[in-house]
Amino acid sequence: MKAPRKHVRTHRQEQLLELVVHDTYKSKRKLPEPARCKECGALWRRGRWSWAAAPAGAHAGLCPACKRIRDRFPAGYVALQGEFFDAHRDEVLGRVRRCEAAEKRGHPLERIMAIGADGQGVLVTTTGAHLARRIGDALKHAYKGELDYRYSKADNLLRVRWSR
Image (cartoon, rainbow, N blue to C red; front, side, top):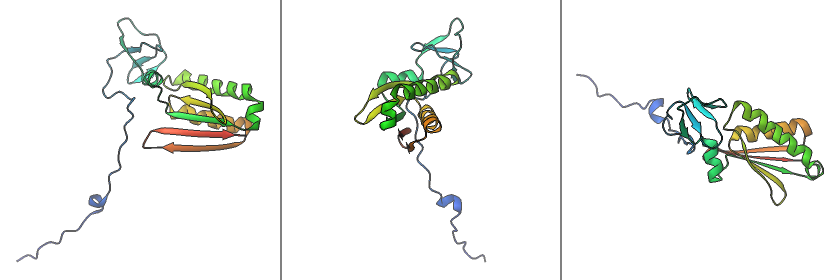
C-alpha cells in the first residue's frame, strides 16, 4: 500500500502576479489598414504609425497622440527651472523644440503638447514618456545641471525636472 503524497508547493504556485497596466490611449483592437489620422496626417500601416503619404481609400481615424492632445492628458512632464534657465530661456526652449523635431521624425506619437509657465519656471508636457526623457537627457548633456526622473508605472507617466 502506498503512503499518501504530501502536497509540495512549487515556485510557480507561490509566484505573485504583477498587475498589468494598460495604456488607455493605445488601440484596443487593430485599426483597419491603412488608416490616416484625421488630425495630424500620420499613417497607420503594418502595425505602426509613421509619416507617409496615405494611399487612396485609407480609413480615417485618430492616433493616440492626437487623442491625448484632445483630452489634455500628457504622458510626460518636463519642468525647467533655475537661474541659468531664466537667463537662457530662448536657447533652452530651442533645444527642447529640436529634441521634439528629431524624435517626431521617426516616431509620430512623440510630440510636445504645450509649453507654459508654472510657479517656478516652465512646464513642457509631452504625448509620450520617451520624448520627456530625451529632452531631459539633452538638457543635462548640453547644459549640465540637476536632472531628476520620477516614473509612475501605474499611471504610465514620467515626470522630469531639470534645473540649473
